[in-house]
Image 1 (cartoon, rainbow, N blue to C red):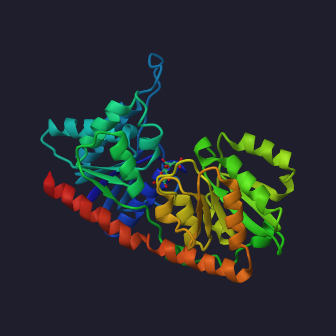
Image 2: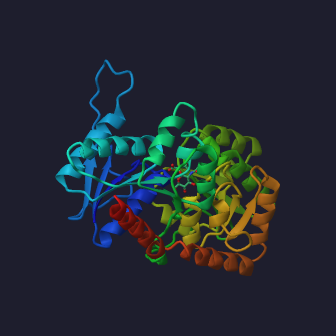
Image 3: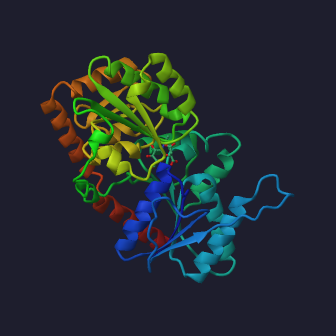
Length: 375
Ligand code: GMT
């Protein structure tokens, strides 16, 4: 198939999933066209069947807001027409599903029909799309998609609760390449980050309020009162400053390392002993899955889709949002002794395998076929 993929090209989970999906589909023989405003961060190599089309929005002083969705829908029309695309897959409802619908309609007037698959990722439903300013457009775009998918059962239920959806929703969980993670890191340079007798605890996110970064710091503060440990925080975002202030108040600055945004997540995870994700909301928690596949157990909240990914007592533990005492106590259960830690690490890897790319990507392929057949 020739598939056009629209996504956000940034470090966010939806962009990462869309990019990894496109790369996986290209390896399975499909021709993939990414359409977005910048080359996606995880898209390192373009090839004969992976293409990137940049959406440019010319600045014009009359516009207070530059019309990105207009530029995107025009770009979609051109790419779909010129490359004879069979199917459009948009990730994130706003504004991608909306622009996709407009492109479909414009193409229809030329006699071209193209099915559109919309994948909802979470914040487009729970945080942003639900806002009264956007809700009518989001509801319309969802209902006018040919196939709608959600990345977890929890997100499907949230979508049905918040929007009047008139179509079926398929749940297709996010995925991970478990083979790639078996890998390459024979030289896991743990000693760069911590002493041999210290445990390494990691948090990776966009440091937005929804991630509850202060809970990460507070849970770590409690853990390090019982065992020697370092906290590594990966990512950049608006909560960093408040977290730095709390770190100062706790007087633990020597044990906390901010590494900023990184393309070397696997390198960091390969020497991590525990992953913290105490989010307020999380449709899936791709970062937790990325940790688990590298054998890192997860202490998380039980928000949203996290219980579908982090299996309580197996790959880690779940606690209520904000229950930092329980999270710290659970972490110490995992660190009880080396045998327990090793068992959790092995089970985290095992649970991650149920989200293997080779199991999940064919689900998208059969939904694509269904969309094409039904158009
Ligand atoms: O977590 C974020 O704030 C980024 C956000 C995004 O839109 O990229 O992530 C969402 O999509 C990811 C990929 O499907 C999920 O793994 C995240 O759980 C989800 N984030 C939230 O629901 C808060």
